[in-house]
Image (tube, rainbow, N blue to C red):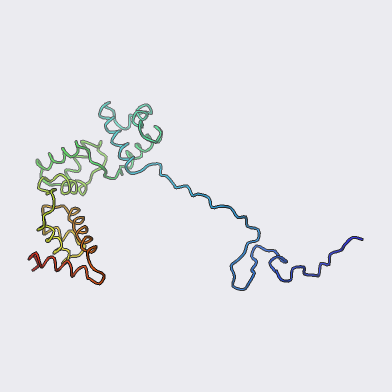
Length: 245
């Protein structure tokens, strides 16, 4: 005699999630949602997205292209795929990718200022000595002479290049104790306003002042005891040096 299942009987009275399998079963009120049909698999490694171009690669490809144009007496518009095959040597991009990127730069004229070539620095110094510090005029001449009239350098870039790297009055030597105390005095007065602190030391760049001050404050903080206030410790050091007004 064949056994006949009673469809009205609940064979799993204690386990409602098994008696009525769904994708949203709950074992207990307030418990986590349980997916009975989910398959457990080890987490897969997420592949990091790698850009087709990095900023440095774009700058390098552009500089190599400009050197190639100067050596072959060609303009960017007249370069062919054979030229870009030479330009792309050593790059991970294909000649076609380099060609597209360089032509894109040519059309948009939006290459961000990167590493300055030595010939650019030499021309910038020469222009400042001849024409003074008319940054807009200097940037225009640089773009004409070195970048096939593309607006690669602007007045701000030229000014920062001169003030931070090329100005012969910049002091790049080691810091004296007197300078360190002046920096700490400026830090107490202005905090992180590096441009204001720079007024006390005109022969140092803003970047140098920022880095040196942060380094000094960090060293003082490391030597402070548990309940010792950093600013009070800086004030004591400056007072001992006799430079606090």
